[in-house]
Image (cartoon, rainbow, N blue to C red; front, side, top):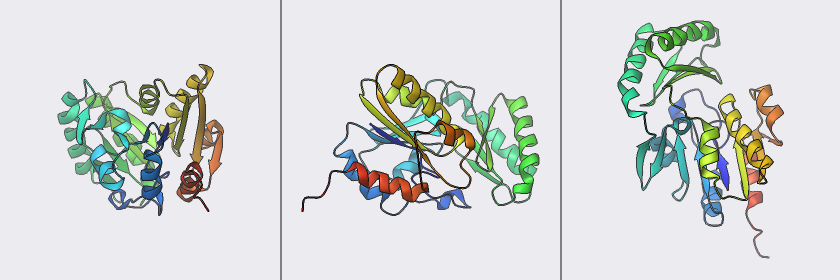
Length: 239
């Protein structure tokens, strides 16, 4: 079973989130792998509709850190999440009204991300705003690369997704690059202790958190290194 984060792993990090696209060669390699492996999928903080538009058919898609998944071409929310949609909408409106210079508010339906990549000096202001919204709304603030995400307090993270998808699998590989991938790496460690063969891969960039690097079994050279890994998992082409 092969599972991959999207931003920073399958796709290079970009200034505007909506401009993100898979690294050259990634979709083709993923499509070929999906024909050969029990399960190939993306486990991302992105909505599944975005992932479906960027990645080839045949992949298992889990979005918003497991808050939603793609089933038969339709986005399905995890139980207990739907009631938080209006709360998140109010959080989006409040973050937009704050109008912090250089900060991008990215609504995701069941969550919202506040990006300060374009203005790193706004990190403190974004952190305070996210904390205030979380305190008033009941949402949870989670730090990520040059951003802070607000999520419903529903049990769901990439570790839970990995555990669910890995049921019955003998071998599991997960690749990621951010703090949100640490629960997935922790799930791999639990699976390994129970006898499953696992590999934790980090897509290395200058922004790779030290905690992620330390938890990885293998560090490759960013999304380009992930594409090389994908090709390496394919059977050799007959001469």
